[in-house]
Image 1 (spheres, one colour):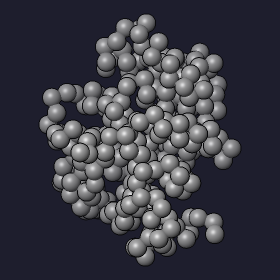
Image 2 (cartoon, one colour):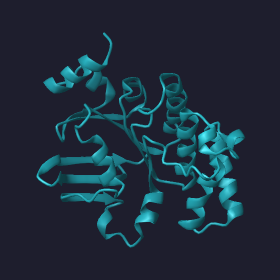
Image 3 (cartoon, helix red, strand yellow):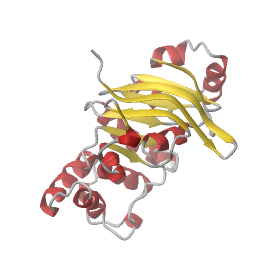
Image 4 (spheres, one colour):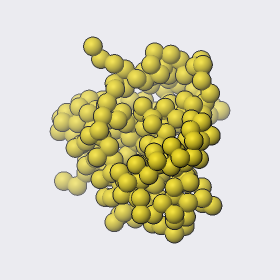
Length: 246
């Protein structure tokens, strides 16, 4: 029997008179890696922000382990520790070291001791290849290193689900691969991941399922082999023909 961690049902989101998401429904199974692809402005990032409670849906339901996330008996901060997010712009505290960035949330939200928090932080910094930079400030490291530090920070909260909002879009091309390599390794650990990405090779090679969004709706979804090799929707075909070098 499938174990769904997140279930999105008939999600709607409008900003004023501008509808951004329209009747979005999909499930996220434990251990799945789901990639969300589509043109800029199709609603991909807004969808993630709704799942992370950074935006309030206009209508519809998002469930976490079968319960509406708006009616959980935990704080928003505690929910976000379980459903973490890695942003385009890293969102690190520039005045704190890499280690401290990974420690502060554990202490404040999870109420862990500094000793335990540092131990956990170093475990994940080592996993993403950033332990030797633990005492560096964000301004002292590259964009790719900042993003790997941000991933370590999210992992330090022991999330059940990790959301990635175009994590390589702000990086120079030579830095993209180091972040993708980190994400690929995470996908093989059983961590549940939802990834908004323009990296088609990641979506094709690492995902269990791919969702193609177009103008605020899920136009098509399925396993990567079908989406990339034999899509049914003409918009999916058009999008892929533009973004994949033939």
